[in-house]
Length: 423
Length: 82
Image 1 (cartoon, chains in turn cyan, yellow):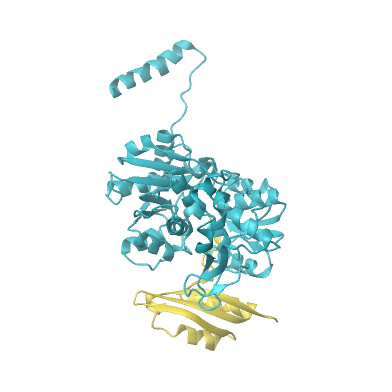
Image 2: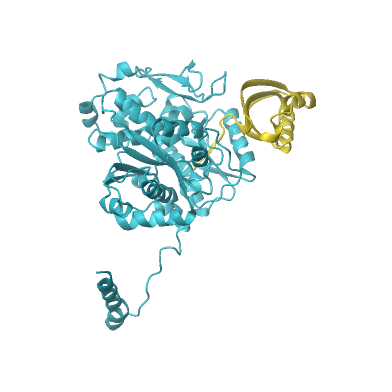
């Protein structure tokens, strides 16, 4: 057993503020409010300086005092510190002065931001003595749990809806995890996962380990600030599924400001969803914090298709508190967003990245993100994971015989003519 | 049969806000109901409820609540992630 961290102090109810010990629990006994990690910031302040951070390896663990584990990380030590790309061509296309892309499509090892949350959850699971870990997921989380559990030598179970695409299932099976496909409506599968989590004494990353898991998302915000030269971005556009990532970016910026690592010069966090499953965006637009569940999500952005978002209420408050807004886009706009990001910056994002890019476009056009300011887009997963969404929508290769004459007639001369018209 | 406990969030549509659904639940099922939090407006009712009793009775009660038009979610709300 590791010595308790002097920095990570307790779990705390987000509703009533009651404190709980740092165990595998996630809900307040009194009001069912979610628990989250609490820290002793006065103890952290003298230790976590810019100089100390800069001297550490390039991974998300360089901010370890602000992560909820007691000892050294044991799972996913190489995760994070993905590139922050200055996206000048995309900025020009969207009509904004300055734009950056936080590129978690190249996060290690499973090409999505979920590796951040899973490495924290599994490191904590090891500290708490779990030998079996599990999750319920429609894709990215399942892949990440399977891969990280494999590398840590943990037994893992991945619960998935029975109708999931073959490619996503394969991305978990390859790591030797136990994949269990469940028939039934979303509501029934959701409740079964809760029961399984409660019954078997496993470390269920997004249920009984959720307070630890969710904190991993903060590292995306910490990295953005550091990579911007120790500044909080004026605007951040974040995809929303459960809404957790948005609330944790908000927490991350607040923590860095509180510790004096950055100056709080004012920032806004904006949320992005697909119109076919936009319970948080719709509530925000209606001006309420009552998130109405979406019974049957209908969008190609499946990684965001959570009809009952657990953190929706808190995401709305984070957006309101920072002067941010929510936006949602159609499936056609999602595909346009994927192509725009790829063609301008050479970054191939999954559908959630298309949602973020397309929503940023709308937020800039509507003036909610002013054109003379700067913004960061959080791109959370690689496009190879959702190729089916864009097959047939990016054109076709032009076919010729092995003849230079054909190449010149059918390709080169036509392109030269088109270039001349464009010029 | 061993007694089990289920922690649930119930979401009522506006047409059910005035109906004494929890009283009916208590009358119709052999379960201990324990209310933890509630928010009721003209538009929607949200209730956090703990149910204790036999597993099959809890399952029947959940099915009955859903038949009435109430959305029943586990305490975590969504356990399935992207």
